[in-house]
Amino acid sequence: MPGVRGRRSAPRAAGDAGVMTLDIRERLSPNHDSRGDPPNMRAINMLVLHYTGMQSAAAALDRLCDPAARVSAHYLVEEDGALWRLVPESRRAFHAGVSCWQGEHDLNFVSIGVE
Image 1 (cartoon, rainbow, N blue to C red):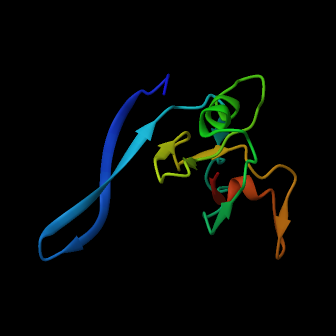
Image 2: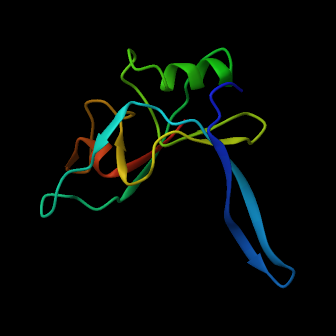
Image 3: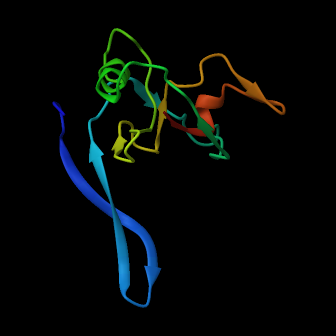
Protein backbone atom coordinates (compact mmCIF):
# COMPACT_ATOMS: atom_id res chain seq x y z
CA MET A 1 0.00 0.00 0.00
CA PRO A 2 1.21 3.53 -0.64
CA GLY A 3 2.51 5.59 2.22
CA VAL A 4 4.18 2.78 4.14
CA ARG A 5 6.86 4.36 6.30
CA GLY A 6 8.48 1.15 7.40
CA ARG A 7 7.91 -2.14 9.06
CA ARG A 8 8.56 -3.10 12.61
CA SER A 9 8.25 -6.39 14.41
CA ALA A 10 6.93 -6.46 17.92
CA PRO A 11 6.99 -9.36 20.38
CA ARG A 12 3.90 -11.51 20.08
CA ALA A 13 4.35 -14.62 22.18
CA ALA A 14 7.27 -16.28 23.93
CA GLY A 15 7.75 -20.02 23.87
CA ASP A 16 10.45 -22.67 24.10
CA ALA A 17 11.34 -22.09 20.43
CA GLY A 18 11.90 -18.36 20.94
CA VAL A 19 9.85 -15.25 20.38
CA MET A 20 7.33 -15.08 17.58
CA THR A 21 6.91 -11.69 15.96
CA LEU A 22 4.00 -9.83 14.47
CA ASP A 23 4.62 -7.69 11.41
CA ILE A 24 3.27 -4.18 12.05
CA ARG A 25 3.17 -1.87 9.07
CA GLU A 26 3.28 1.86 9.70
CA ARG A 27 1.47 4.66 7.95
CA LEU A 28 1.35 7.60 10.29
CA SER A 29 -1.84 9.62 10.35
CA PRO A 30 -1.62 13.37 10.94
CA ASN A 31 -4.87 13.15 12.92
CA HIS A 32 -3.74 12.98 16.53
CA ASP A 33 -2.63 15.18 19.38
CA SER A 34 -1.48 15.10 22.99
CA ARG A 35 -3.16 13.00 25.66
CA GLY A 36 -2.59 15.97 27.98
CA ASP A 37 0.08 17.16 30.34
CA PRO A 38 0.83 15.93 33.87
CA PRO A 39 -0.84 16.04 36.29
CA ASN A 40 -3.96 16.12 34.10
CA MET A 41 -3.12 13.02 32.05
CA ARG A 42 -5.50 10.09 32.50
CA ALA A 43 -4.41 6.46 32.36
CA ILE A 44 -5.26 4.42 29.27
CA ASN A 45 -7.87 2.02 30.55
CA MET A 46 -9.84 0.76 27.56
CA LEU A 47 -9.66 -0.61 24.06
CA VAL A 48 -12.27 0.62 21.58
CA LEU A 49 -12.95 -1.66 18.60
CA HIS A 50 -14.62 -0.12 15.56
CA TYR A 51 -16.03 -1.39 12.28
CA THR A 52 -15.30 1.05 9.46
CA GLY A 53 -17.75 -0.28 6.89
CA MET A 54 -15.53 1.07 4.10
CA GLN A 55 -15.23 -0.69 0.73
CA SER A 56 -11.65 -1.77 1.37
CA ALA A 57 -8.78 -1.56 3.83
CA ALA A 58 -7.02 0.79 1.41
CA ALA A 59 -10.01 3.15 1.48
CA ALA A 60 -10.13 3.01 5.28
CA LEU A 61 -6.39 3.71 5.50
CA ASP A 62 -6.73 6.69 3.17
CA ARG A 63 -9.63 8.08 5.22
CA LEU A 64 -7.89 7.59 8.58
CA CYS A 65 -4.78 9.35 7.23
CA ASP A 66 -6.57 12.21 5.46
CA PRO A 67 -5.91 15.51 7.31
CA ALA A 68 -9.23 16.89 6.09
CA ALA A 69 -11.16 13.98 7.63
CA ARG A 70 -9.87 14.62 11.18
CA VAL A 71 -10.45 10.94 12.12
CA SER A 72 -7.91 8.27 12.98
CA ALA A 73 -7.23 5.21 15.07
CA HIS A 74 -4.14 3.77 16.68
CA TYR A 75 -4.37 0.58 14.62
CA LEU A 76 -6.14 -0.75 11.55
CA VAL A 77 -6.54 -4.51 11.08
CA GLU A 78 -7.22 -5.73 7.56
CA GLU A 79 -9.49 -8.71 6.89
CA ASP A 80 -6.43 -10.88 6.21
CA GLY A 81 -4.92 -9.91 9.57
CA ALA A 82 -2.41 -7.34 8.30
CA LEU A 83 -1.85 -4.77 11.04
CA TRP A 84 -1.17 -1.06 10.52
CA ARG A 85 -0.04 1.39 13.21
CA LEU A 86 -1.43 4.83 12.42
CA VAL A 87 -0.98 6.74 15.68
CA PRO A 88 1.54 6.05 18.47
CA GLU A 89 -0.18 4.80 21.64
CA SER A 90 1.30 7.73 23.56
CA ARG A 91 -0.80 10.12 21.42
CA ARG A 92 -4.56 10.69 21.35
CA ALA A 93 -6.16 9.37 18.16
CA PHE A 94 -9.48 10.79 16.95
CA HIS A 95 -11.62 7.65 16.88
CA ALA A 96 -14.28 7.85 19.58
CA GLY A 97 -15.75 11.30 18.93
CA VAL A 98 -18.09 12.64 21.61
CA SER A 99 -18.14 9.64 23.90
CA CYS A 100 -18.60 8.30 27.40
CA TRP A 101 -18.58 4.92 29.14
CA GLN A 102 -19.28 4.18 32.80
CA GLY A 103 -18.60 7.74 33.92
CA GLU A 104 -15.51 8.22 31.72
CA HIS A 105 -15.88 11.08 29.19
CA ASP A 106 -13.95 11.84 25.99
CA LEU A 107 -12.73 8.30 25.49
CA ASN A 108 -10.03 9.38 23.05
CA PHE A 109 -7.96 10.46 26.06
CA VAL A 110 -8.13 7.07 27.81
CA SER A 111 -8.33 4.49 25.04
CA ILE A 112 -6.55 2.75 22.21
CA GLY A 113 -8.65 2.72 19.02
CA VAL A 114 -8.62 -0.24 16.62
CA GLU A 115 -10.43 -0.23 13.29
